[in-house]
Each structure stands twice: as C-alpha cells, then as structure tokens.
Image 1 (cartoon, rainbow, N blue to C red):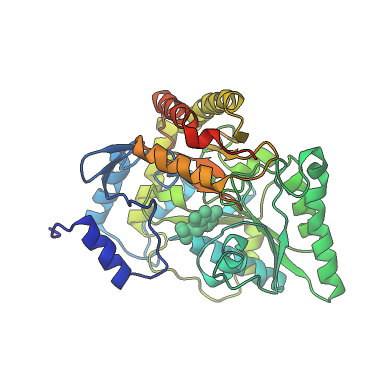
Image 2 (cartoon, helix red, strand yellow; image 1 turned 90 degrees about the horizontal axis):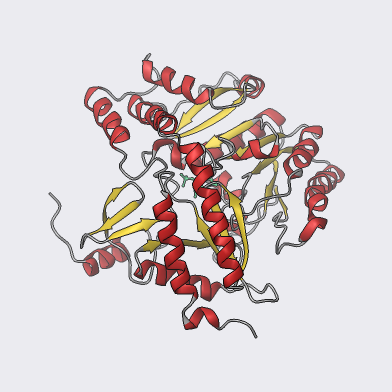
Length: 436
Ligand code: PMP
C-alpha cells in the first residue's frame, strides 16, 4: 500500500522530481482516486461529471473492460512473435469497422507512436520528407509527430516550424481567415498552392496529416468538401493521406464510426489511440494493402508491447461494449440533445459566439459581439464549473473554446445537469461583462 500523502506533498514532489514541463489542471489541482461511468471521484469522495475525457470512451473503469484486462493479464502477456488468438480476434473486429480499402493493421501503444509510424510510412513510400499539416494541429510528442504539430512547435517555448512542414490555415468557417461561405472552397486550395511551391524548389510531397474534426484547434468542423480536395491535391502529387482519428474515432461522431466518413473520403492511413483501450495504452495504424506492401522494405517492424494479448483483449472488449450498449447511436442522440440545448443557451447568452460539432464531439466559443475571443471568460467558466462539480476543458488558438467530449455513456440526465450548471455560471456577473 502506498503511504498517505498530503496534496501539498504530492505537488512538491512532482515539482522536484517529475519533468518540469508537466502541468496540472486547475489552480487548485484535483486529487482523483476513482472513476465510474461518466464520473471521476476525488479523495474526499466528491463526484465530478466528466465532460472532457474521450480516453475512457465506454465509461471510466467499465467492468467488462477491466475484467478482460485482468483475466488476460493473469494468463499471458508476450510480444507478437508468438502466435496468439487475441491479436487475430481484435484485428478482425477492428477491420470490420473500417472501409474495405483499409485492410492492414500495425498495433502500437500511443497516439504519438501511431502517428510516428504513419509519417515514417508516408516518407518511406514516397521517398520525400515534406509533409502538409493543418494549423493548430496536434499529433503527438515524438520527434516526427511534433514536427507536424503546429499546436506545439508554434506555442510558447516551441522550436518553430521545421523546414519540411507546410501548414494549411485552420479551416475555421466561423472565425478563421476565410470565414463564412467563402472558406468552403478557399481553405482547400492552399494544399495545391503549397505543393506547387514545393515543386518549384525541386521537392515532392510525402503526404498530408490531419484530424477530420480538429480538436486542439477548437473543435473545428472543416467545410464539407475540404478533405476531398486536399486529398486529391496530395494524391495527384504522389503523397499519402493520413487521417488522425486519435480523438474523433470509435463512434463519437454519432452519424459515423470515424470522422473522415463524414467527409466521404477514404484515407491511405488511419491512426487511432486514446479511446482504443479505454485508458489502457493501445493504439493502431490501419492502412491500405498498397501502403503496407510498399512499407515492407524487408526491414522488420518490431514493437515490444504493441499488440500484446492483454492490450488486444482490452481493445476487443471496448469494441464489443460500443456495440452491445449502442454507444454510437447514443452519441448521436445525446449529442443532438446537447447541441440544441447549447444553441438555446446561445440565444439567451450572446457571449456564446458559436456552437459546433457532431455527436459527442462538441464545442462552443466565447466572444465579444465583434467576435473577439474571451479566453479569461473561458477560464472563469471552466473553474466555476469545477466548483459546481463539472469538469470541462478549454482549447483553440485563442483558448476561448470549451470542448465537450465526454465518455460515451454520458446520459440525458448528465446533459441536463451540464446545461443547468452552465446556465447558472453564464448568469453570473463576470460572464455578463465582456463587450467593450
Ligand atoms: N493525435 C491527436 C489528435 C491527439 O489529440 C493526441 C493526444 N492528445 C495524439 C495524437 C497523441 O496521442 P498520445 O498522447 O497517446 O501519444
């Protein structure tokens, strides 16, 4: 048993002995000791409704997922150089959820690792180094993934954009460079322009990486034809198209199982993480047979933990629970309810500038009447909501977007509770003073 530590002791120890760039949420950090469904519970037994955690996808500590992990852990965990049924069972179940063109899997341990491998595939196959990526995108903490993550390399303390990365503007139709209908065609045109410029300097493109709904960018929904056009420009130039579904996948969109399906495209490579293992480190790279064949240069791909029987048993169970509990349909239903309630709130409180998203991947932003972002109001809202027992996260290039992406078991009761508490906080003095 670990000895009891005060919260001050833990904060002090972290500062001294854990990486200095680790952060803690909230100025008064939470000491969470247990999870259950859509709730997190602190050391005093206080329950918080979690609207932000898209990792514990089928609910915190879902009993079936926990049991699957415990059972397999008691029997065997080894690497993929031995035959085992679990990796086959998991692969079959996951591939059944993907378009038929995506038929080969590489199983890894984190979203970063998945994107690192996807980038290596694109570079190996094309023989090029240069990548297109979307502004304010985040794809992971490894070197290559960081190199296409403008959310990090352009942020405070970041190293700046690598020469081989070319950034498309955030396709934000509400407050972006080409807002309104004008953006519908214009945003995708940057892809061919950047590829043209590259050609002029004698270089080719390795590929494009992007989330189909852009989470760190502030729950951005790109225009309907955006990916069709970007993918076409990239493929015409011989590049590989990678869809990062680490945040958006596994039924969260409600209408579709993957976010790219909302845009009628089929990527060459799809990367998955966060929800795949419901909190257990499990991530996947799915690709076409052509990509898998071209990547198979003769050099072995080996991953000590990736695809081990414990991870695969957990991953398979997550997919089973999504089906058994109809969580994709549930995301559609609760998402629509929540979105329409948020739109009603927007009528009542004009500080809410925009409400957007699909399924249980929603966002709203706080602005002045001139669409100037209000990050302090977003912070105030998140802090006050925590005091009222609800956890929310803020993001976007101006940190004025509240992101809603709860465990998929989020119920209509939970949605009503969220709206009730938001109404309370929006009615408070601080939230009423923002225009100048
Ligand atoms: N891609 C996206 C879209 C992400 O949001 C994240 C994590 N926030 C990653 C990749 C990296 O995943 P991980 O932290 O599991 O390495």
